[in-house]
Image (cartoon, rainbow, N blue to C red; front, side, top):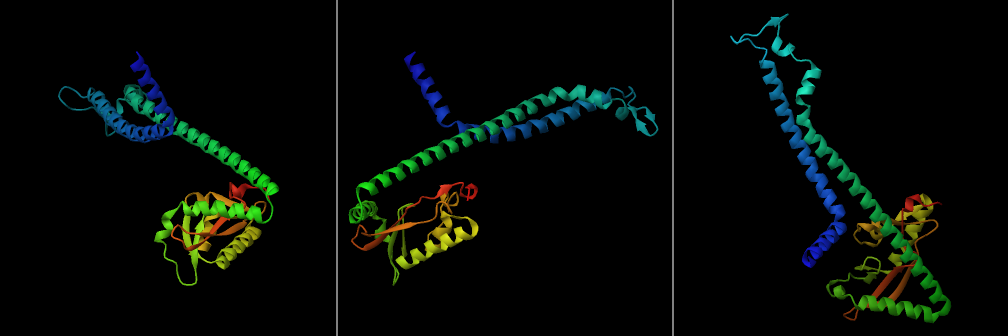
Length: 268
């Protein structure tokens, strides 16, 4: 009994954790099954109607002809045909209904998970903002900047990918803390990109994270198109001077105002 209970618990946990995937898979399989069952039902219905119409043929194998049409085609009305064949279409209708339900529930669960993630992101962002404000109150001036530099240095030191970065002439190694990526640039280019994004915000009320990455020479990210800055939350970059794990000078950049979701729907 304990073994069965454990199996049931594991099964329930698996279904709960993968409900969206299972429903999506069910929708895909259901779509194919509905098409197959509908095709089979159509062939079977045609066969049933044909056999019923053949019952009107005389034993000699000759059909009665009225106005150029045989009673084999005139013998059954549309309603009679429907009565004959409707049971054949019950399976595809049921399967189609279950498929639609699976797709709808999958969409609802995905929307709920997205809402939960957005709420968690908002809570984390608010907590981080409050923490930063409190630290800024306690530590001002050089001490505050020293703390930020040390945090960014720890992030850079824990990431050894800098060892494969080749720095072009006139540029220095840079590290984007938000996407955890290295790139080559200069402080001037980064500030220029910051100003361009804020000008874009002034002109169009918002700008995306990917637009900033385009301007500093980084590839776009999947989340970069979903997050952005607005006139209420403009782009502001903090720059710290650090060292890469192999001892080279490295510029670490961080966003003072993190980009937000639904930036194009924010009030201006």
